[in-house]
Length: 356
Image (cartoon, rainbow, N blue to C red; front, side, top):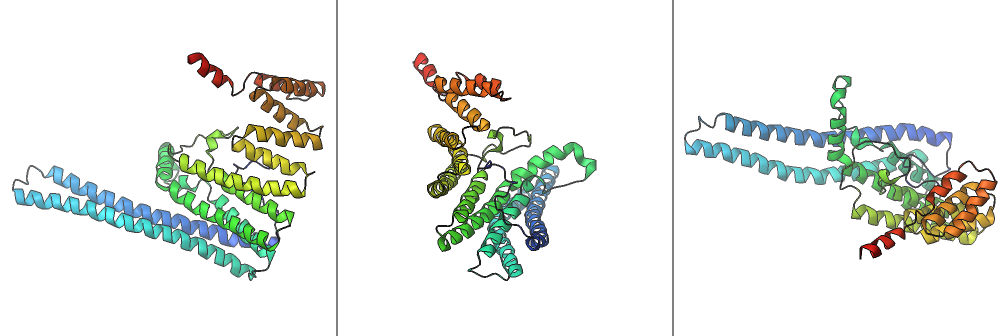
């Protein structure tokens, strides 16, 4: 399985020139409408914040002149009325904003269907809708950082502006992407129901779950991640972890179906290994890589990954055996494998026993 975390990768091998034209004509306008919704809500917040700040400033500046208690009470009442109106209207606009996102998603799907002359029993049409939803979700990647832009003259405050933009809108962008990826999953499920024994259909559904699970993964936990953009500390908490586990477990079930129908396909077991790794199930991950080696005994990359797992799980004898095999074959990463010797999770148990 290709890494589930890369939201910029699409796992649907369905491409035609006609559908590429649809991609260009529908995705960009939809993204622009999405940004417009975000900015309209920001304008509302900015207006009321400026109004409240102005009223408070006016009250403080003229406080010495408001000697009459009645006049002071009127000014205070005006400030509290404005604050109350802001929170009341904000709740209303938040509800309307979610409704606009749903309507935008529906309009996008209807536009795709209209371009296709959609037919319910046409599998290519369902695949196209799934693919378009994935591509729009990919197009929205990092949009939470780009809502506000003030030109090159303000580059010195660009990081702060990006941080503010993300803090205000990451939930909105996530909500939209989640809806789109769930639609992609639903379209693949429809295909599975119509062709339950088609392996390509099950592979498509499994990959749709993989892409969905990547939405809930903290990119800072991905090896090789070097993006230093600010991420809200509460974004990848328990709720996201539960969502990730649910999507990953469903992907595993689909890959198990594939392994039952195609027991000699190493690609299937590679997908299982990646999923087990993300779910922190090292024993199952080891079994998947061992199966790959039975099918492809000369696969050096799999030997390296399995050797690393052996060392991390304290199976040092097996790890050393694979290390020797890689060293004899002059594999360029063989020497780096031995650095994982002794780096197994059980060391934490020994530490706890020592402390006790």
